[in-house]
Amino acid sequence: MISVKNVTLAFGKRVLFDEVNINFVKGNCYGVIGANGAGKSTFLKILSGEIEPNKGTVEITPGERMAVLKQNHFEFDEVTVLNTVLMGHQRLWKVMHEKDAIYAKEDFTEEDGMKAGELEAEFGEMGGYEAESNAGSLLSSLGVGESMHQSLVKDIPSNYKVRVLLAQALFGNPDILLLDEPTNGLDIETIGWLENFLAEYENIVLVVSHDRHFLDTVCTHVADVDRSKIKVFTGNYTFWYESSQLISRQISDKNKKNEDKRKELLDFIARFSANASKSKQATSRKKALEKLVIEEIQPSNRKYPGIIFQPLREVGNQILNVEQLSKRTSDRVLFDKVSFSINKGDKIAFLSRDPLAVTQFFEIINGQSTADAGKFEWGTTITKAYLPLENQEFFQEALSLMDWLRQFVPPHVTDADEPFIRGFLGKMLFSGDDVQKKTNVLSGGEKVRCMISRMMLQNPNLVILDQPTNHLDLESIQSFNEGCQTFPGVVLITSHDHTFIQTVANRIIELTPKGIIDRLTTFDEYMEDKRVQEIRMEYYG
Image (cartoon, rainbow, N blue to C red; front, side, top):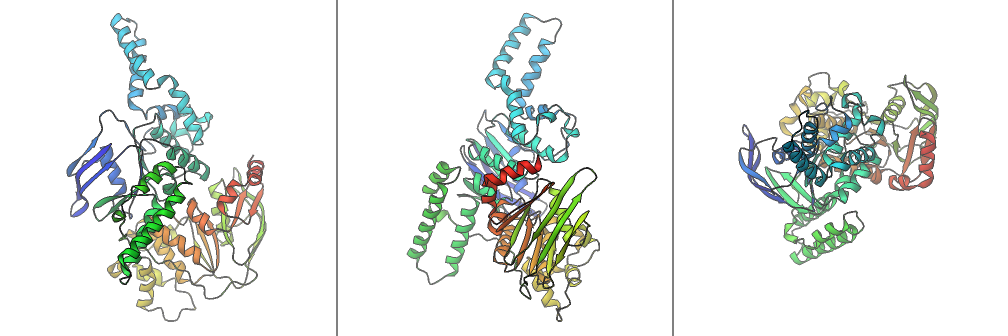
């Protein structure tokens, strides 16, 4: 168990945590949520001992081992991949080297023999004789092949380093597992493996993530960081979000009787409990919900941005026609012979095992890059808005947010006065003096919110979104997701956010080096389609 008692932390006048008291118990997985800057990552660092609070204590049950997902991707550059994983179990690693040092002695004594025997016994109890095999299996499960296991970490591709560090944290079945954004840099298949691993994990897990599907799959509880406090709620992220929204609606409905409100809540909990029985963590989550006291459910006091795309006109019959489009880099083919047409009502998720492929495709159809072969043609009725993967070029000058957004006012708008501009910034939670903030001091999330304001200003009937959830907090992701679901136009999207793709897309197009796979289906159905998997194996080799 982890017991947090009266923990307080302040940086200058800013109080991050004030008298926080929580217990985290075995068998539960806690999703730590909160707005950007609320202190989620800092809280994990307090638990791990990396940061000392101003006041209060963190107590861990004696003898329990804690493992933390390291954030420094260069810390183990001079260590082999396999040894980096083994070092995740510090005591095992220490014992391994102590006994090896004894055996290496030239003047091996009887006392050395007794000490070596003690270490061998401890080594065996910790699973030391299977350690290398287990570490190798863990790496392979995370997509790090055997050919890399004896390489130095500095010599493997950068996108594999986070997988090695994740294997390090998971290795040896720690009693307490602290994971900060563990899905970053993972593909959908590897995220699925991690979901299954954690859903069956029997010890304490605390995880910070912006991936709602991941949180829903693995979490039994939500730890909400808000207003310098942390409150723990039963259920996963969707249960927390929907129940808090329900309570908020009930509070605003002053005429509703208390017994009616209580019945509505009980019905909601019963429906969610039934759904929980289908989840990977069915038993623990269902038991937790059965013990839930209605008074524990509280409304969220978070602010959600208003992301609403309002087209000036409906799309025509001719939207986008792509013929035999191909693109390669100096060392590989990104995609080849891509041909398809977009229809009214399409909301298309673009996939590829090569993340550069979809970004290049989006840049080509936006006129920002050129294809090696093939052509494309937009319909005359199309007004598109593009959210690129990288947005640095839009923030080169130190402009106020008002002046920054004003430069993107489209020709059809004739009355772009201050209230008009403020309205679009206000939808993205830039209010009051925030609109005078300079663009050169914005955080990554603030820049993305500015880019979304720019998109809404354009009144598009087609939006192109390259990893739209990057840098956004859960509130913005939720609103963006809902905005795309209700958008009457066409959506082209690529994302690692499972929930976003599953709830928005009605068509999947996968770009491969040997052609495309094109299906009118949801994302989940696509990933479970056996014929699709056969084609993927054939195309990727």
